[in-house]
Length: 191
Image (tube, rainbow, N blue to C red):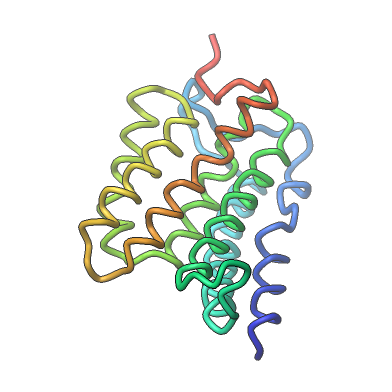
């Protein structure tokens, strides 16, 4: 399988609107409901983690063989990976039109990161994402915590190139920034 086919497969998996098939008028569990997705939404959450992981694996494999376009820098493949992940997370967030929209890409983020970052970075950085979300009681804090975790821990763990984690950490914030620019709330608990 050639590099472009890996990339096309990853893009199809990452940008497919899986949540369009959710149960009608359903909601994701939020901070104030203290529950998790159930029924069909639970199945789609598990599938979302799996497809993000497979898509991440395909994208990482596909970008290895490509030339360092357009700037000829050795880490351009890492920059492309981060850009596509940020856009995929933003697409996942904006598929939802309810107030739970920033929870939708959380499962996707966990699946994607499990395939493209070193397990030590994921295990050590995940508590920052979860802790930030619980402390501030907003889904947007999960992305900011994940960003800080990826950048800080990725620079310490020598088992992986630090440029990948720094660029991915910056890209993880894209759904939050796009939400602010679009005038949507940041996924906090409803009053």
